Length: 203
Ligand SMILES: C[S@@+](CC[C@H](N)C(=O)[O-])C[C@H]1O[C@@H](n2cnc3c(N)ncnc32)[C@H](O)[C@@H]1O
Image (cartoon, rainbow, N blue to C red; front, side, top):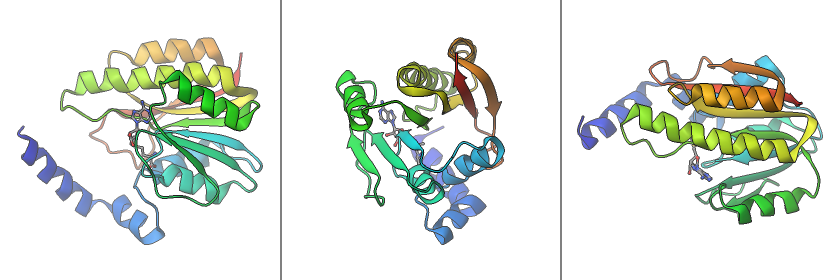
């Protein structure tokens, strides 16, 4: 499909999407917020006083929700892109894969954290299997980082795309965590390979 046809279809989809309209009314920056809300409703990720890292945070709706739902939170977000400031959330602009940025995150908290979220995704190329592999690579990197920075009873939530790399993510998850769930929130588009992995309690 030609690029301008893809973007016309995308605009059409956005206009008719109830989650897009709801996010505008409720003041969230992206429809992605409802995926996290649905994940939290089902798996009870948030708890008051939690420290939380939001990987791939732009434009910021996950951090907005976490800030609203968690009392006395300490939240750090990172993305390749700048975001408009959200309350007390601190933001790093940069590549999460860069060791320098991983160190910045560790230094910011100075101790282990309660929750790591990753909604990181590469810019889609139109080649679904390649996009799925690249997004799963980001999930694997985030999972390995979570192993280093999470408290024993910590929680890791990550976007994954169903595809050839999915098993790799699952196998690694089972090695690192005691409890694993794979979940597609109702607000995740039906025609997308997107799913989420929810991992709890380090081995
Ligand atoms: C689907 S969006 C995240 C939406 C966000 N959860 C929200 O609620 O607004 C995916 C983000 O991942 C970011 N991203 C992709 N690769 C990254 C990397 N290596 N380091 C940091 N951010 C990355 C992209 O820049 C993009 O903003």
